[in-house]
Length: 68
Image (cartoon, rainbow, N blue to C red; front, top):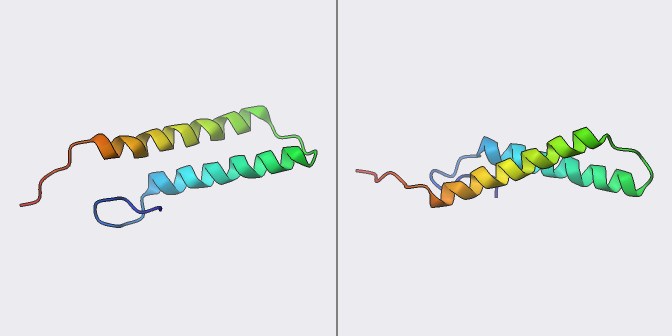
């Protein structure tokens, strides 16, 4: 899930996106149990997730270099 499609190495974009997603999930659970989460922190994590998913999805549509 965290590896890129070309050489099966771990992609830093996917790792950062997954960690930001986990932070958003923890913030949601904390909010359910009555802890207040800073809205600016939550918004910034959401933007990281959206950007990370966008960049990861754009890799699928980019031209791939042919190997010789």
